[in-house]
Length: 80
Image: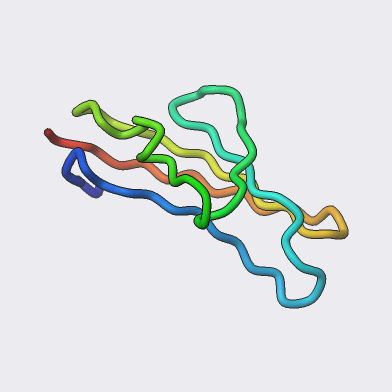
């Protein structure tokens, strides 16, 4: 499992060359899914998501314009 310092930053992205990406949703440690707008706005770490030393699980759902969906789960440790 990857280990990162408590100032780690996480940006999300998805690419669909055929139809385009409609939305990206994320959940941190079982929280409700939230819409992720763009790395041009705010990244997850700026919301204080990874400031504590512990294990994190980030679930990501990316949907394209015709309804196809891809799911990914990322697990890592943050050490302060």
